[in-house]
Figure 1 (cartoon, helix red, strand yellow):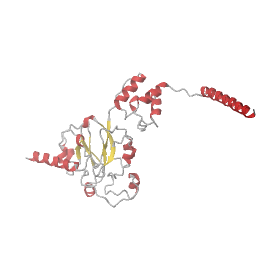
Figure 2 (cartoon, helix red, strand yellow):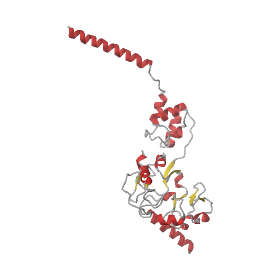
Figure 3 (spheres, rainbow, N blue to C red):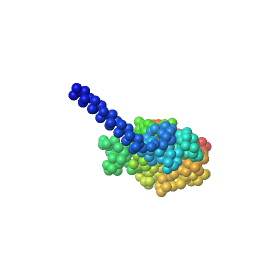
Figure 4 (tube, helix red, strand yellow):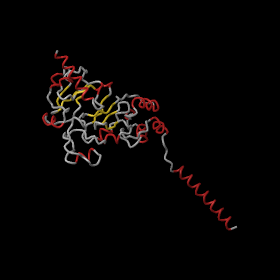
Length: 290
Protein backbone atom coordinates (compact mmCIF):
# COMPACT_ATOMS: atom_id res chain seq x y z
CA UNK A 1 0.00 0.00 0.00
CA UNK A 2 2.85 2.38 0.77
CA UNK A 3 4.16 1.90 -2.78
CA UNK A 4 0.73 2.65 -4.20
CA UNK A 5 0.42 5.82 -2.10
CA UNK A 6 3.85 6.93 -3.28
CA UNK A 7 2.92 6.40 -6.93
CA UNK A 8 -0.34 8.32 -6.49
CA UNK A 9 1.47 11.15 -4.69
CA UNK A 10 4.07 11.39 -7.46
CA UNK A 11 1.31 11.38 -10.06
CA UNK A 12 -0.53 14.21 -8.31
CA UNK A 13 2.69 16.21 -7.97
CA UNK A 14 3.37 15.68 -11.68
CA UNK A 15 -0.10 16.89 -12.60
CA UNK A 16 0.31 19.92 -10.36
CA UNK A 17 3.64 20.89 -11.90
CA UNK A 18 2.25 20.32 -15.39
CA UNK A 19 -0.66 22.62 -14.63
CA UNK A 20 1.68 25.28 -13.24
CA UNK A 21 3.96 25.06 -16.28
CA UNK A 22 0.97 25.35 -18.59
CA UNK A 23 -0.26 28.48 -16.78
CA UNK A 24 3.27 29.97 -16.79
CA UNK A 25 3.66 29.29 -20.51
CA UNK A 26 0.48 31.21 -21.23
CA UNK A 27 1.26 34.08 -18.87
CA UNK A 28 4.85 34.59 -19.96
CA UNK A 29 4.48 33.59 -23.61
CA UNK A 30 6.20 35.90 -26.08
CA UNK A 31 3.70 36.86 -28.70
CA UNK A 32 5.10 36.53 -32.22
CA UNK A 33 3.81 38.23 -35.32
CA UNK A 34 2.75 35.52 -37.82
CA UNK A 35 4.00 37.79 -40.59
CA UNK A 36 7.56 37.25 -39.36
CA UNK A 37 7.28 33.52 -40.00
CA UNK A 38 5.71 34.21 -43.39
CA UNK A 39 8.58 36.47 -44.44
CA UNK A 40 11.16 34.03 -43.05
CA UNK A 41 9.71 31.27 -45.23
CA UNK A 42 10.11 33.48 -48.29
CA UNK A 43 13.79 34.20 -47.63
CA UNK A 44 16.57 31.97 -49.06
CA UNK A 45 17.48 30.75 -45.56
CA UNK A 46 21.23 31.18 -46.08
CA UNK A 47 21.68 33.21 -42.88
CA UNK A 48 24.59 34.87 -44.65
CA UNK A 49 24.34 38.20 -42.82
CA UNK A 50 24.65 40.25 -46.02
CA UNK A 51 21.55 42.23 -44.96
CA UNK A 52 23.30 43.34 -41.77
CA UNK A 53 21.31 41.05 -39.47
CA UNK A 54 22.44 37.91 -37.67
CA UNK A 55 20.08 35.63 -39.55
CA UNK A 56 16.99 35.39 -41.73
CA UNK A 57 14.64 35.40 -38.72
CA UNK A 58 16.13 38.65 -37.44
CA UNK A 59 15.88 40.19 -40.89
CA UNK A 60 12.26 39.07 -41.24
CA UNK A 61 11.37 40.68 -37.91
CA UNK A 62 13.08 43.92 -38.95
CA UNK A 63 11.20 44.00 -42.27
CA UNK A 64 7.86 43.49 -40.52
CA UNK A 65 8.68 46.32 -38.09
CA UNK A 66 9.64 48.59 -40.97
CA UNK A 67 13.25 48.92 -39.80
CA UNK A 68 14.73 47.72 -43.09
CA UNK A 69 13.60 47.67 -46.72
CA UNK A 70 12.32 44.45 -48.26
CA UNK A 71 14.99 44.58 -50.96
CA UNK A 72 17.84 44.42 -48.41
CA UNK A 73 18.07 40.65 -48.89
CA UNK A 74 20.68 40.72 -51.66
CA UNK A 75 20.91 36.94 -52.22
CA UNK A 76 17.15 36.71 -52.60
CA UNK A 77 17.11 39.20 -55.45
CA UNK A 78 14.09 40.76 -57.11
CA UNK A 79 11.92 37.65 -56.82
CA UNK A 80 12.26 37.56 -53.03
CA UNK A 81 11.71 41.31 -52.76
CA UNK A 82 8.45 41.10 -54.69
CA UNK A 83 7.23 38.13 -52.66
CA UNK A 84 7.92 39.94 -49.36
CA UNK A 85 6.25 43.12 -50.63
CA UNK A 86 3.19 41.15 -51.69
CA UNK A 87 3.00 39.37 -48.32
CA UNK A 88 3.24 42.60 -46.32
CA UNK A 89 1.38 44.85 -48.73
CA UNK A 90 4.43 47.03 -49.37
CA UNK A 91 5.40 49.03 -52.40
CA UNK A 92 7.91 47.14 -54.52
CA UNK A 93 11.35 48.73 -54.86
CA UNK A 94 13.56 46.91 -57.33
CA UNK A 95 17.17 46.27 -56.37
CA UNK A 96 19.90 46.01 -58.98
CA UNK A 97 21.47 42.52 -59.13
CA UNK A 98 25.16 42.49 -58.23
CA UNK A 99 28.07 40.18 -58.92
CA UNK A 100 31.46 39.86 -57.25
CA UNK A 101 34.46 40.78 -59.39
CA UNK A 102 38.12 40.15 -58.53
CA UNK A 103 40.39 43.06 -59.49
CA UNK A 104 43.60 41.11 -59.90
CA UNK A 105 44.86 38.83 -62.66
CA UNK A 106 48.35 38.31 -61.25
CA UNK A 107 48.24 34.51 -61.29
CA UNK A 108 50.99 31.98 -60.64
CA UNK A 109 52.43 32.42 -64.11
CA UNK A 110 52.41 36.22 -64.41
CA UNK A 111 53.01 37.45 -60.85
CA UNK A 112 56.33 36.87 -59.09
CA UNK A 113 56.73 35.46 -55.59
CA UNK A 114 59.30 36.77 -53.13
CA UNK A 115 59.59 33.52 -51.20
CA UNK A 116 57.86 30.19 -50.63
CA UNK A 117 55.10 30.59 -48.06
CA UNK A 118 54.30 27.49 -46.02
CA UNK A 119 52.24 29.03 -43.23
CA UNK A 120 48.57 29.28 -42.31
CA UNK A 121 46.22 29.22 -45.29
CA UNK A 122 44.85 32.66 -44.58
CA UNK A 123 45.37 35.78 -46.69
CA UNK A 124 45.38 38.16 -43.75
CA UNK A 125 47.86 36.10 -41.77
CA UNK A 126 50.14 35.65 -44.79
CA UNK A 127 50.01 39.39 -45.49
CA UNK A 128 51.38 40.12 -42.03
CA UNK A 129 54.46 37.98 -42.72
CA UNK A 130 56.88 40.46 -44.32
CA UNK A 131 54.00 41.99 -46.28
CA UNK A 132 53.08 38.74 -47.99
CA UNK A 133 54.89 36.39 -50.34
CA UNK A 134 53.85 38.18 -53.54
CA UNK A 135 56.24 40.67 -55.10
CA UNK A 136 53.18 42.89 -55.65
CA UNK A 137 52.03 44.23 -52.32
CA UNK A 138 48.53 44.72 -53.73
CA UNK A 139 48.12 41.34 -55.45
CA UNK A 140 45.86 38.42 -54.57
CA UNK A 141 47.50 35.86 -52.29
CA UNK A 142 45.04 33.18 -53.32
CA UNK A 143 44.68 31.53 -49.91
CA UNK A 144 40.90 31.43 -50.03
CA UNK A 145 39.50 33.80 -47.40
CA UNK A 146 36.83 34.75 -49.92
CA UNK A 147 36.06 31.11 -50.66
CA UNK A 148 35.53 30.21 -47.02
CA UNK A 149 32.99 32.96 -46.30
CA UNK A 150 30.83 32.39 -49.37
CA UNK A 151 27.64 30.60 -48.27
CA UNK A 152 26.66 29.90 -51.88
CA UNK A 153 29.88 28.13 -52.98
CA UNK A 154 30.20 30.71 -55.74
CA UNK A 155 33.98 31.16 -55.44
CA UNK A 156 36.84 28.73 -55.79
CA UNK A 157 40.61 29.05 -56.13
CA UNK A 158 41.59 27.97 -59.63
CA UNK A 159 44.67 26.03 -60.64
CA UNK A 160 46.26 29.37 -61.54
CA UNK A 161 46.06 30.47 -57.89
CA UNK A 162 43.34 33.11 -58.21
CA UNK A 163 39.68 33.19 -57.14
CA UNK A 164 37.16 32.19 -59.80
CA UNK A 165 33.64 33.59 -59.39
CA UNK A 166 30.77 31.48 -60.69
CA UNK A 167 28.43 34.06 -62.25
CA UNK A 168 25.45 31.72 -61.98
CA UNK A 169 25.95 30.97 -58.27
CA UNK A 170 27.08 34.44 -57.11
CA UNK A 171 24.33 36.49 -55.45
CA UNK A 172 26.39 39.64 -54.89
CA UNK A 173 25.99 39.36 -51.11
CA UNK A 174 29.36 41.08 -50.57
CA UNK A 175 30.72 38.75 -47.88
CA UNK A 176 33.79 38.06 -50.02
CA UNK A 177 34.38 41.80 -50.33
CA UNK A 178 34.63 42.12 -46.56
CA UNK A 179 36.78 38.97 -46.26
CA UNK A 180 39.50 40.12 -48.68
CA UNK A 181 42.22 41.87 -46.65
CA UNK A 182 43.61 43.56 -49.76
CA UNK A 183 40.26 44.95 -51.01
CA UNK A 184 40.59 43.20 -54.37
CA UNK A 185 36.93 42.24 -54.72
CA UNK A 186 34.06 44.54 -55.62
CA UNK A 187 30.38 43.89 -56.20
CA UNK A 188 29.30 45.47 -59.46
CA UNK A 189 25.91 45.73 -61.17
CA UNK A 190 25.41 42.77 -63.48
CA UNK A 191 23.81 44.70 -66.37
CA UNK A 192 24.52 41.82 -68.75
CA UNK A 193 28.25 42.42 -68.40
CA UNK A 194 28.24 46.00 -69.64
CA UNK A 195 31.57 47.82 -69.68
CA UNK A 196 35.29 47.06 -69.61
CA UNK A 197 37.43 46.81 -66.48
CA UNK A 198 41.06 47.37 -65.54
CA UNK A 199 41.70 44.22 -63.52
CA UNK A 200 44.44 45.49 -61.28
CA UNK A 201 44.59 47.21 -57.89
CA UNK A 202 48.24 48.24 -57.67
CA UNK A 203 49.18 51.80 -56.83
CA UNK A 204 52.90 51.25 -57.42
CA UNK A 205 54.90 53.01 -60.10
CA UNK A 206 55.04 51.43 -63.55
CA UNK A 207 58.57 50.02 -63.23
CA UNK A 208 57.79 48.48 -59.86
CA UNK A 209 54.60 46.93 -61.23
CA UNK A 210 56.38 45.47 -64.27
CA UNK A 211 58.98 43.76 -62.09
CA UNK A 212 56.33 42.24 -59.84
CA UNK A 213 53.62 41.34 -62.36
CA UNK A 214 53.66 41.21 -66.15
CA UNK A 215 49.92 41.91 -66.41
CA UNK A 216 49.59 44.76 -63.89
CA UNK A 217 48.55 48.32 -64.75
CA UNK A 218 51.66 50.43 -65.28
CA UNK A 219 49.80 53.75 -65.26
CA UNK A 220 50.90 54.68 -68.78
CA UNK A 221 47.60 56.52 -69.48
CA UNK A 222 47.38 55.06 -72.99
CA UNK A 223 43.84 53.85 -72.31
CA UNK A 224 42.84 57.25 -70.92
CA UNK A 225 43.98 58.98 -74.10
CA UNK A 226 42.33 56.39 -76.36
CA UNK A 227 38.85 56.36 -74.77
CA UNK A 228 36.39 58.44 -76.84
CA UNK A 229 33.82 58.44 -74.03
CA UNK A 230 36.22 59.78 -71.39
CA UNK A 231 35.22 56.79 -69.28
CA UNK A 232 38.73 56.13 -67.97
CA UNK A 233 40.44 58.19 -65.30
CA UNK A 234 43.56 57.79 -63.21
CA UNK A 235 43.17 56.97 -59.52
CA UNK A 236 46.66 58.04 -58.54
CA UNK A 237 48.78 55.54 -60.54
CA UNK A 238 45.95 53.17 -61.48
CA UNK A 239 43.59 53.45 -64.45
CA UNK A 240 39.92 53.01 -63.53
CA UNK A 241 37.00 52.59 -65.94
CA UNK A 242 33.54 53.99 -65.20
CA UNK A 243 31.21 51.26 -66.48
CA UNK A 244 28.32 53.73 -66.60
CA UNK A 245 30.21 55.76 -69.23
CA UNK A 246 31.85 52.85 -71.04
CA UNK A 247 30.13 51.94 -74.33
CA UNK A 248 32.19 48.78 -74.88
CA UNK A 249 33.95 50.11 -77.96
CA UNK A 250 37.03 48.15 -76.90
CA UNK A 251 39.55 50.69 -78.14
CA UNK A 252 41.32 50.65 -74.77
CA UNK A 253 42.11 46.93 -74.94
CA UNK A 254 44.75 46.85 -77.72
CA UNK A 255 46.57 49.96 -76.46
CA UNK A 256 47.13 48.50 -72.97
CA UNK A 257 50.78 47.26 -73.00
CA UNK A 258 50.43 44.61 -70.25
CA UNK A 259 46.92 43.52 -71.31
CA UNK A 260 45.16 44.42 -68.09
CA UNK A 261 41.81 45.51 -69.58
CA UNK A 262 38.98 43.05 -70.18
CA UNK A 263 35.36 43.27 -71.33
CA UNK A 264 33.06 42.16 -68.51
CA UNK A 265 31.50 39.59 -70.83
CA UNK A 266 34.85 37.76 -70.99
CA UNK A 267 36.53 38.12 -67.60
CA UNK A 268 39.61 35.92 -67.18
CA UNK A 269 38.13 33.27 -64.95
CA UNK A 270 40.08 30.37 -66.41
CA UNK A 271 43.82 29.65 -66.69
CA UNK A 272 45.06 30.63 -70.14
CA UNK A 273 42.48 33.40 -70.59
CA UNK A 274 45.15 36.09 -70.20
CA UNK A 275 47.03 34.82 -73.26
CA UNK A 276 43.79 34.65 -75.24
CA UNK A 277 43.00 38.26 -74.36
CA UNK A 278 46.49 39.37 -75.41
CA UNK A 279 46.17 37.53 -78.73
CA UNK A 280 42.83 39.19 -79.43
CA UNK A 281 44.25 42.60 -78.51
CA UNK A 282 47.26 42.10 -80.78
CA UNK A 283 44.95 41.02 -83.62
CA UNK A 284 42.83 44.16 -83.21
CA UNK A 285 45.97 46.30 -83.05
CA UNK A 286 47.31 44.72 -86.25
CA UNK A 287 44.05 45.32 -88.07
CA UNK A 288 44.05 48.97 -87.06
CA UNK A 289 47.64 49.32 -88.20
CA UNK A 290 46.96 47.95 -91.71
